[in-house]
Image (tube, rainbow over all chains, first blue to last red; front, side):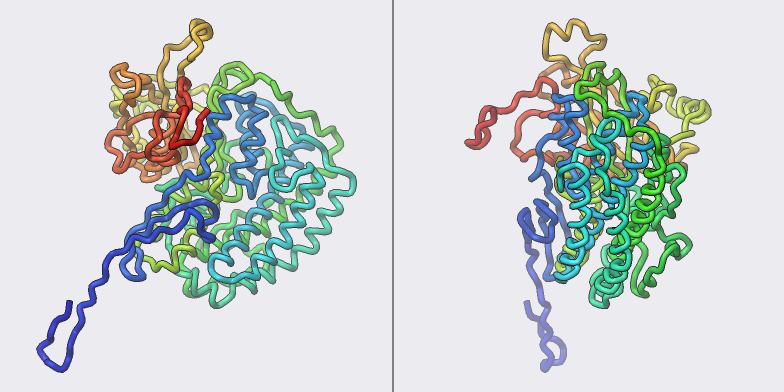
Length: 401
Length: 179
């Protein structure tokens, strides 16, 4: 519709753009799996976004009501398949909480070792794939190069590269093979200097900072209200990490371990290592901060792996046998959340005295983290949608279960 | 998740919502409070805004179907068939949790297929939105007052509630064999 202004030489165009519905996914490379987003756009600006999930739904919870508690471990592998070790741990601890079962000291330290290594592997994928979302290919290759080495270590420990079922009810399926710890230490020595490369490639990269700083700001209140957790919550400045603040059965696992929660406190991140400075454009709660928290956690987890290697190798006692496949679980219910790489992963088990749980429930961290995405994307540009979705670091296997 | 309970906190809730609290067990593995369905929203508002421990975040909503389809086994169970909703709440400041349980009939007015009604808590915590949609989708509970209650994981035209104990897979779904 055009209008003639008072001055006949100036013709003003009142440009009216039509609202357009843009369908993104479920097969879209930057949606991290089968996530479908329907964007209502006005030109380049997204006025509304609606996520559609469920494309990977396998009703794992129904399967959990038909198999014994230990038989459900492989199904937890397939939830967050990028951090399957941490999923195994979550379910194992929840059932152990209901059974009031305590694993041996050696198993406890081995669990910390494996879980923290799993966290590094998961954050490496998160970081590499985030680079891909923003159009840079090389960080992905650098990240996967190192992740392969972790997968090699896992393969040597349990035989699988992705779906481990290694941590299980009552401990772990097997002890580490001889020479494994040396290989793990060699990996850590080689990996540590590489972190600086990642910071040069992404964290301090001018284009990366422009694409992420100040984009998709999640306020502290909203983060809590939506029940987000993990790096998404800490990226908004909430000082909460279940490894320190969780239930005693979980924090007991980390008893005696020294680590600082990766969160900005009084305007400062932990300074236990050399980290790049926060860019001037970054706002607390934006994509950059969520990414940066993950990068700090890689270093933090490596420290924890080193500590656990020391403690594990000093343990004299046996590792202990895991519980039987048909081990009966008592009547009653128990809920436990653990700090998985993507956030707080909760498992809820209801027993009726038989080996098969009456109800098995998985509270997915990515599920709650994704629920906030429509708030973050309101008013952003279409090009920022992959930046925001990528910064949440979701895994559809865990959301859809 | 420790140190939340203490009689003071529960007494205050009981004083504020005398009809809301219908039972409790503070010695359970996860201490819980049973809430009357009609008063759920107001109890939740109290827990978030007025409680000495402000439960500012909702972690999980679960529905448990207490129903035994096998008649032989059903004769031995100690409970009456019902549906139990379990709310896991978390306080960020106090780093404490509490569990709310709500018991509702399996079907509204005993008509199979009609989901029982419970007030929605999306007005208290926005994070409850997707959790309630999931419970509606898989367990069949109608959350009255939810702004957009529809299936979330299953397709929109799916029939039945898969996490009910008497659920049977459809024989056919758009030409795909079910079982």
